[in-house]
Image (spheres, rainbow, N blue to C red):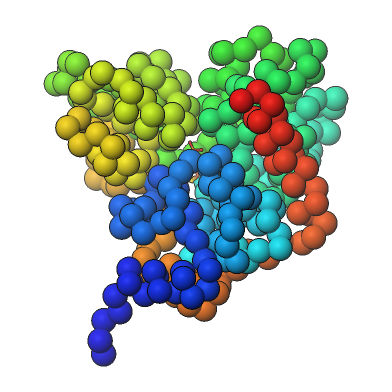
Length: 313
Ligand code: 13P
Ligand code: SF4
């Protein structure tokens, strides 16, 4: 049997079917390189909503594909592995969250995009790590807020604003695994290194950060900053774009607490492969199918995020 040239075949199928591939920064380099667009969660949602294509393939995790479907329900949205979930999204179930909202009445519900479509439908407004603080500060000052599901991002925002916020107790299994000691060891070795951290990391790691931001903010920082060495505390997929845009700098992935595992890699993101992308476009499945009613309710909170972001810039 002759081997399939996945890159060539994906290119051919994309043209034939008017399909585009939107990839998250945590995807493997081969996938980032064949994607039509690579970005953070916010940018992928924006690209999906303005895409001039019949088929949108999300090389990322399920909540990202669901967000795309919510925004363009008339289009076919595909995900190469339907089991590519997210531990953070899973840490907030609709039943428990409904109870939490009922126990804390009168609060505006701000949810991070890393949530299921059901949680989005229960929320007043969505945010991503790129715009969370701006979204919260866009709300009237006297509004009390529930923030879900990430306790680390939520507590980070709480430290930056005077708003009354209660935070759902969820977390990402990847970002909570970075080792404070391991990062400090690296810093001892590379004294000039800047420690750059995603806000989903725990407080001790955030406390030693020179810069905290979303994946796109971390990338921008390494592009514009005059440093030469960076210890990067987020999923190491992001290093590919850092190296591409500034190959002369050194980027060191922050180590996880357990060095015997690859636990700083998101096992869900890494479920996506070139082979799966090929078969997904070929067979036009797995497809994201959502109930019309839930799309209607979830789209309100996602569109409100877009409306606020475009107003405040
Ligand atoms: P960004 O929105 O910063 O890309 O983060 C997405 C994510 O899943 C982080 O773990
Ligand atoms: Fe979800 Fe964490 Fe993976 Fe991001 S890194 S997709 S938050 S499990």
